[in-house]
Image (cartoon, rainbow, N blue to C red):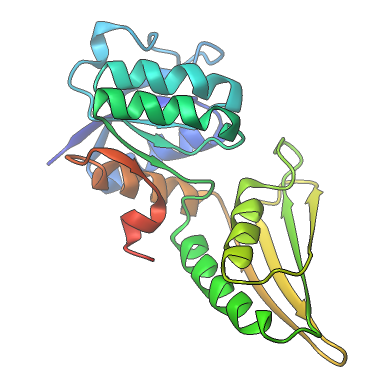
Amino acid sequence: MIMRIVLVGYGRMGRLVGELAPQYDCEVAGVIDPMSPAHSAGIDDPRWSGVSAAIDFTSADAVVSNVPALARRGINVVLGTTGWQRDETELRQAVTDTGIGIVAAPNFSTGVVLFEALVTQAAKLFARQEEYGAWLHEAHHVMKKDAPSGTALMLRRSMEGAGFDRPIDVTATRAGFIPGVHTIGFDGPSESITLTHTARDRGAFARGALIAARWVQGRHGWFTMHDVLGVR
């Protein structure tokens, strides 16, 4: 069945989601992005009636108004924007009050979710080896504003949650057109072990967002890509 979606934000990620949408039986009803020539209408416009999900790749400042407004319309949300955590309590309340479903993730790549599971297991193993230190480095294109990335912070939290209680050095690079590289390292007296995820292009993120948009239909509450992929 064809599902109608609205794209909130029409930068590189929004355009790519729109290009890939037909592969996932999704029809783009329009674009909400006043800064883009492709802008169709505001969130409150009647044309969004019957839209099942909104995929938001905007900015942290926009999210705090976008999500409650979409929720009031009964439109489920796939939230790919990062840096909004300071407003999480307010956003969660909007989801609870309206009964919509939301999938919020710092990274929608299937590979990254599975990578996190591997990193968590590695951190659990190395936590017992006190002579090993840990580090995390991420690299993204020069236009990415948040550094370290939301994915890097997620990976660090996962390592700490797995019991690695020693300092984890986190660094970031912003250069050129790098889609995204995350490397976790464990270093001991005579050896190093590294785990790396490399995104070849932004397609992994766009595809994951479309998978999430289809999955969240009929669900109510706050979810992550772990829920979508069944990874615990």
